[in-house]
Image 1 (cartoon, one colour):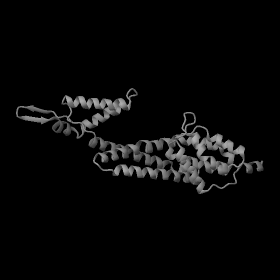
Image 2 (cartoon, rainbow, N blue to C red):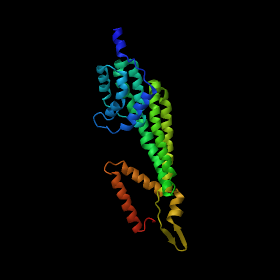
Image 3 (tube, rainbow, N blue to C red):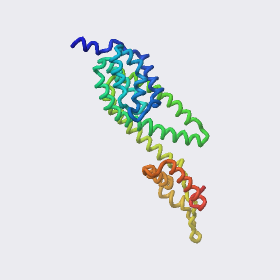
Image 4 (cartoon, one colour):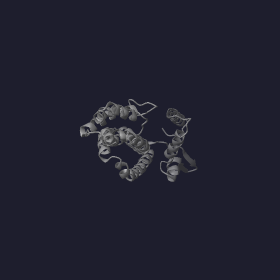
Length: 275
């Protein structure tokens, strides 16, 4: 029994070069092999195959590991490397004995990581930086787009770093950083809402040109009434209206864009909105 356990364990020691190469392979192929049966599973296998071959010189063990990683796996690509690095550490330590634990770990952690990663990297970052870069571009300033490009390069470097962190920290990492990550996510969410609120007031332009006259008294509906109630009231109401449409499954973004164009054309033609 003792000999069998020894055989199951790997005698190969994973190097930093191995981890970096596996990470770069995953970064490159990540969504290219995406499918609806196993999602990122094939990409994971392709990226880790050379490294797993070193860990498992025995064909049967190597095949068992590959088959295990072909199982369903899906999380935010930006954070997936931390999971893969952890699984490498587990398999290096316990060999094929670790495969059930590896699968359980991946299954249990990919959901929470996706919730965090999707919020930060798929929603908050593109929304905040894209809005800022777009607004700066309207002013003829390319700095926002340049910063966006440079930060995305840093994100790719971060992916490689997370692979190493996952390997060195193992399963302890998620427990250690869990509360801190949640706190950061909440702070980023507040920041995102704040930026969007500011952009609504500065970028969305909706104004009413009507001037109410009664005898010698004249009152501009926009500046003397609406702006007194709340500056940028109409942009806020219009943005809320669009937001509610996006929440309706019958309204696609394309339909909403055409609706906005139609409202702008008709409203301006009838004199309801100021061009």
